[in-house]
Image (cartoon, rainbow, N blue to C red; front, top):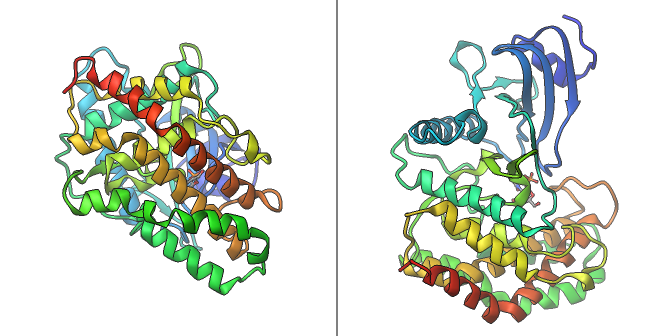
Length: 375
Ligand code: GN1
Ligand code: MG
């Protein structure tokens, strides 16, 4: 088999049954896994594929991840097939199993590699800058939740325990402060103080869940803007991707991540946190898009009430996670420059402040939208 690009991904493509000349190129901007676009004669014929190496440190139970993805994409596929309006091959990710019915190839280092059909003519947005983009990203996630509201497939595994357990994320930060493994605590006193002053916030969603005010559903857990494929021509939000953390959880985790990733006026790793504001126009479009995507699905009252609060909690949590990784010496998130995790943390914390300041106004926007023909 001839390869235009050598390396592990090319070899793995061969294991998946690619033959002849195969082009392999690094793809995407994820911070955890590695993705490659593979073009050539593959198991599903000549075409484009997405080959991914699942990070085994982050996802120790790769088989559970793959079983979840298969179950969820099968349900989504059946659900959209009933709707003749949509081209289901463009709105649902399609997993191509490895030989012998296995869902992934297990490399000698233990990492799982999996193959998807590439959805052509799409782009992802590392940053949302226009309201129609915010609307489409959020609509795609709203539809994702609507389609999964009647999920009746096999029980989904929890692939990462406590993934959005914000109190546990704060406890992990306190441990990292104590350990000070990279000798960096002295440089982030202000950030630590900012976080500690807001410690009670970590309970907001978990308490609502414990008290049964918000139901456990299937949630994506990484509902950031760049995890929606957008039609390159029409701008329409198509498929929700990056399904590794799809598992039982709260819808508000996803709302929170949408608010975090869509409404910020700067990039996630901008070096000037003073420039961070919450874009009201993007927030409005986000809320409109999310409820449009949900369609007739009704939420619990507390899910409406905590819509904006979830943005605060998940942004705060992400700031805590970036800060923790900075203190640990940048072990978890992929970085390309020194101080990048600290910049990321500062942007999240600046966004927390901006969301605090805008909270009343943003809640009024949600009430305005929900009031129009909603309970
Ligand atoms: C990671 O790998 P990526 O970029 O899809 C992280 C998310 C964070 C996100 C921040 C498994 O997602 O939780 O919100 O970075 N994924 C995992 O950009 O930790
Ligand atoms: Mg992810």
